[in-house]
Image (cartoon, rainbow, N blue to C red; front, side, top):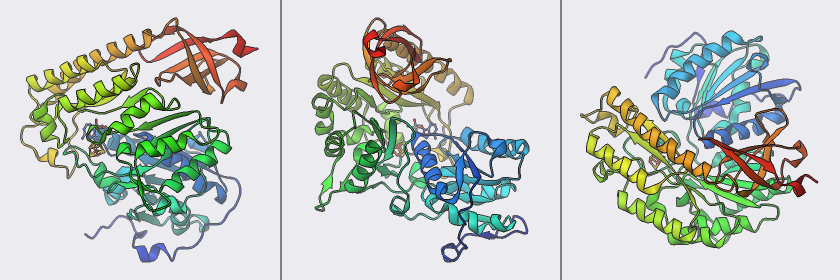
Length: 470
Ligand code: 5AD
Ligand code: SF4
């Protein structure tokens, strides 16, 4: 395909990649990164900061002052795409400089050339697998020499990125670590297998070394990330494959790590060893994010989910047998092509049966080049809207009831940051509910006992137990 964008060339061949000039390490540069979408993008954004820091780029929260603006995009639903284009315009208009604009992430990967065509202000486009080469892309743009050549690089070099990244800087007592990336499940509605590539697990040593480094620098909690994290099968040092349960047990042995979480899991990959770990490993927090998407077996087949509603409910039963207080969270799609009122009622019934502590729910959004987008019987928008409102009403009520059940109880909370109001600090309970309380900032990084006094649908308010303050 021949694409004419501007008179400035797009350089995108691997050959050119390795011939580019090098970026200097001048001081006083600043980078603003906006992340859209999932937690893996949040992790990637932090790693981009680590990649750029040796080249003099300090992170700024003020886009107007930044020399480099990176939009770390999401492609999962249509709304996410549209937002990026309007944000590019907004940042360019609001800037006090003439910043270099880069679009990374899944949308960059899936529609790199289209991004270049639709947004002439964008200088660099790259995907989730190439951000370790950001300094090279900036150098290739000619920015240091006053040029603005346009650079498009959406190569797919598997796990190369992880080998090239500098050590992760610590941002707070709770850290994310990607252990598995990509997906081979090919749910018929989903772009992830096309944007993040095939399912790949990082080797055990890489993961454990990264967590040890974080713990030595003060991390207390680690959240292991992957699109299908429970399909983890990283290679151990003697060449054998480790599953997620084994990895979690090894992470629990790392000095300084007190709390462990992982996300996101797939119901078809859930084994008894992992389920039993919730009974056996006190550092593994009682919270499980297990998307089901629909409660109708007919729709689950159309979605290519490879599990039934009953398989899912049985898994929840086993998890609750292992850890009776476990908080269950999920993802739902309403209005998938062909979804009837009866199918939707089956989803509502499943939600009533599970009783969720929190959940994410979405209207089905047709994505380019996915099988579901081609299905004939698309559901009208007003029907999707009405179903989403009903589902969200039920989920919000369940979440509110779950939060209320903690009022009057004393919980252990890892303090992560200052809170919303002046004088407040903020953390999360073992069940992953945000809690705010009055307290001194020096408690950040400590686990403290908190008496829960109030609950809303989305968070808790508490008071620190007196002996903690002393
Ligand atoms: N439309 C709506 N929601 C989607 N998700 C993934 N693809 C789509 C789509 N095309 C939702 C699923 C998934 C979550 C990350 O996003 O619920 O679990
Ligand atoms: Fe997408 Fe399905 Fe893979 Fe999840 S399991 S990332 S929904 S294809």
